[in-house]
Length: 623
Image (cartoon, rainbow, N blue to C red; front, side, top):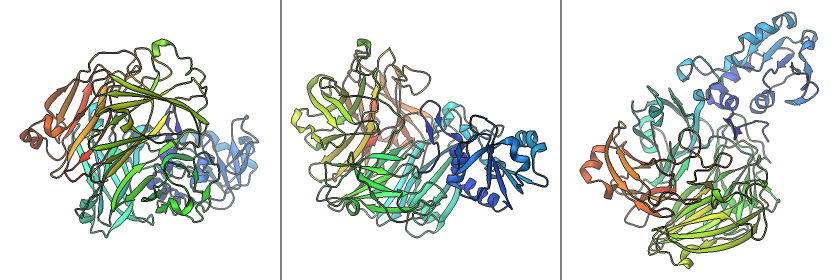
C-alpha cells in the first residue's frame, strides 16, 4: 500500500498529496531526480518522506529530521537521524522535502556537508500560470483537480458536464487545464478550456475532443485542473456515457471525490445474464505492482489478486468473474487498491445494453460511535439515507445496504417507506445485518406507486453504528430492460440541532438547512429529470419552498419555476415541462437548472431519459 495520507475528514484533502500527484509535478520530479548525484541525504522537515518516496521511488542513503520525537522512527524505509548529524553524513546531494523551501535552506546552510548540492521540491512546482494563489504554493485552491473516466470507442462516448460554480464565490477568469491519457497511460492531448465568466455551465465531450485532436478510438482518463478558482477546491461533475452509434446504452455517474483509498465498496456481483467489468485506472505516475489490486466478497477476507503490473496513469478492464467466478448478485464485492486509485468505475453489460456507475470510498479511519444509539429526541430519527421509488408502473426499484467502513461488522437498519405526499406507508426492520450479507430488496412489495424510502439505524436487536451508512440503488425499466444504479451515504437532515458535523451545509457552518443542487439540461433526443426528496430526521417545515432556477450558458438567471414538496415527500421534476421550449432554447447548450431552497435541505437523483426506455441516474451534487 502506498504510504500516503490523502484525506483528513476534519481538514479535507491533503494538499501535499495533491501537489505531488499532479501529472506536471511527476514530470518535474523526474527531472529533479536526474540531478541527484553521489550519496543523497533527505531532510524531511514536514514529514512527507513516506509519500514522496512511495510515489517517486529513488535511492536515498540517509534521512534527517529536526523533531527529536521522530528520531529513530522509520520513514521511507530509512531510520530517521537527528539533523545535527547531517554535517558528517558525507552526502554529495541534500534533498529538502519541502515546497517554499528557501527559508528552510537558509536555516540549515551552515550544517551542509562541504561541497554538497542542495535541491528542494520547489523545482517540482507547477508553472505560475497554473496557480490560483501564487503567494502561497500549498494553498488547496492551487490543486482543484480530479480525474474522469473518458472514452470514445466501441460505439460509446462520454460527456463531462458541470458549471463554473467558483464564480459564485468571487472567482474571476476560471479555466481548465486538461490532460487526456490513453489506456497505456500515454498522453493523447493536453489543452486548456476557458469557462464562462459567470456561473455558467460547460461540457467536455469525448467525440469533440477526438475530432479536435484527430485521435483514434480511446479509453482512458481525463485529468482536470481548475485554475483561478475561489471558495471551493473540489471539482464536481456529472459524466454521461452514451451510445454514439445510436445504440441503446445510456448511463450517468457523478464525482466529487478526488482522493485515493485503500479499499472501495459497493461493487455488485453480476447476475447470471450480466457481465461486470471494473475499470481500473492508475491515478499516479508510479506503477501499481502485481499483487496489489484484489477483489474479494465483502466480509470474506479471501482476496483474489491481480497478478500484473498496471503502468502509470494506465487503464485496465477487469472482468470480476475472472477473479470470483462463483459469485453472483446479490453478493457484493470489496475492492482493494492500496491507495493507487482515485475513483474506480464499473460497467455492467446486459442484453447488449451498457451502464456504468461508481464504487465508493471504504473508510478505514472510522470507529464505532457509541453516541448514535443514544441520540436525544431532538435529533429525531438521526441519520437518514433517502432514495427514490420511481413510478412503479414503469420502473422496478431495488436497494441493497453496502458496508462502507472497515469498522462495520454489522448494519442494524430499518426501512421507512413514504409516498410522494410524505405519508409514511410502511416500515420494515431489516435486522442487524452481518458484513457479508446478501440482502437486496424489491420495493414493489410495499404498494407505493411513486415516492421514496429511507434507511435508518434501528438498534432493537443490538448492533453498532459509525454514521457512514451506505446503500446501492438499482432501477430497471420494465419494458426495455434498461437499468441504472447509484449509491450514496446517510446524513442527518433538517433538524435545528446538530450532532458532530450534521446536518451538513452547502455554504457556511451547520445546520445545513438550504439546498443548491445542479441539474443539467437534456438534448434533442433525451429529457433530463430529477427525483427530489425532502427527508427530515424530525419535524420541519410542512412544505418546502423550492425553486427551479434556469440559468443560461453565461450563468445568468433567466427563469424560475416554483416547486412545493411535502415534508418527507418527493417529486420528479422535468425542465422541459417546467419551462417552455423558447425559454429552454434561450438557456443555450451550457444552460442548467439550479434547484434552490433556503428553508430546507433536499436530496436528489438526476439523469436523462428517452422514449425507447433508456435512462440514466445518479445522485445530484450541490455547490
